[in-house]
Image 1: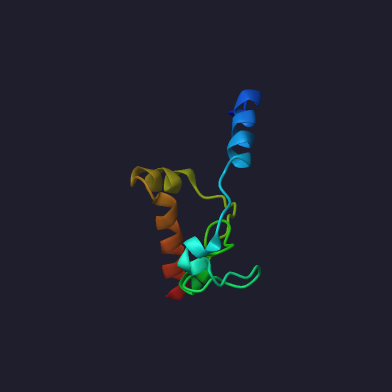
Image 2: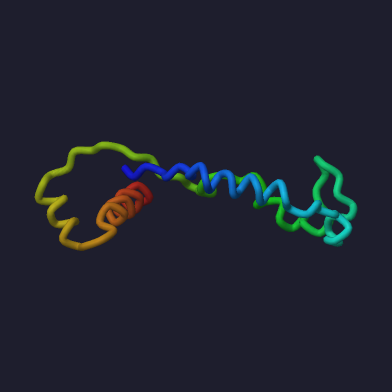
Length: 100
């Protein structure tokens, strides 16, 4: 596992200096922020509401579940030879057997 590099003290001082010397932000410079009130959505960004504060992968409509099952070796060998996606193919066959 690769460790993350921690910022070097010189780099941290530079960053602090940049923040300290940054010009003051004026919300009138950006039209979308003129009416900004903390805690209220910014006008014009409502279409992005569904993407804000979403973390991780999106939920699947039909999530799968990891299970352990013992199958005959000749069956698994045959399925492995079909190539990539052989486990998905087994799942499809099981579903089709359930539906028939």
